[in-house]
Image (cartoon, rainbow, N blue to C red; front, side, top):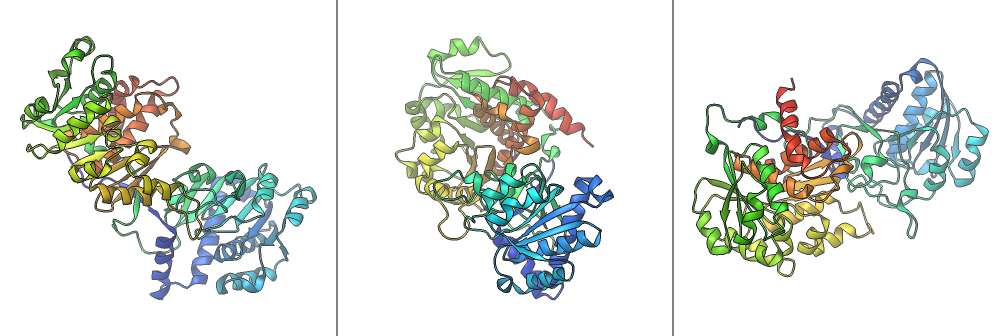
Length: 527
């Protein structure tokens, strides 16, 4: 295997973005006004890049400015469009005298070109009837720091939904850290957020662009450079997973054990399908040999379904201890279809084994088996383990963290899925992959990555029985091949979605391992 760290693009929290701006300003490399001007220029560039026809003929824009620096960006955009011959109407939410210093400067610059109207429900409600030619709405109301609902949005969304809408930094009403809509109490939260066709953000995408509802609410996201320092390799900066194809190459001139051996434990008669899915995925991803460990009652049905997979008898913990005496086994998958009672004993045996180093994937029943005593599991886990819960399993193991994630934000930005996975991984002392359309992977060191299966990578066909078992198998196979737990989880999440996209509608879990060769070939042959 070749390659270094899993390739990824940084995703910033509001605090990290604020710190990046402060670093440049405090070093005297740019002023706040400089950054605001660059941001406004970036928004105009992105509009013309996204809709080239708008750059050819001046149009009519409505710019909605908020009471902070995001509003200041909006005044810059309004001025730049006006200077290009556009008709521009500007509304301000709040009192001009309460604008921050830099935003106030750009407010006053705009006043040399046009007026500013007060934004309220009555004003915006009749605006589009009087100005039907308005073709684009610029949302500069609230940026990355919003932590509360605000009232004009519901009326605005109804008014602008038939026009192109551009949000600056994040759509107003969306929490930039969690991707949650900050709607009114008792109402549909989605009514408390502007849903953008285009979001123009700066320096790097924000967590809220890929988490929760943010990937849909943000529309097409464009990142513009405003002259901040390059992102450092800071473990506190979450990363968006981008596949490193070099990790998928097989060992040149090796043999089957050069690519690792994996063991997948199976449930009893009539319950072996999940383990067979996981085992086949581990083999397809390139593990040199994969063995199914099953009780005697299930061996007949398994033998009738497999050819390339090996099969051994594992009834209990003692049998597992003997099987793990084979030092060639690098990775073990426990959970799919195992049954909670059987899983409990086998997990304890696997995690207490003297045969190291063993990399272990715990999924499904292996997690649910410890719902009543999660700390017994955490005490046995180590840095070579990967947990792959869906949110229900995560809640059973980490009820307090899940409660924080579900709680409404009463003060400050909302608790995010990244926060939750980081806290859980630190507590468990291992890598955790929390499944979902916004899959989040974190490890015990604080590293965190996000894989969003939304927008262009939306794969709704993965919502089918057995797809999670295949993901567990892919990760197990990658561990057998030598990837670290964190990198195996990141790579597995990406490939899992790649397979669904390659197959398309009609996908069932059995199709995922069979489409893997095509997906691997595409990645390995890509320039």
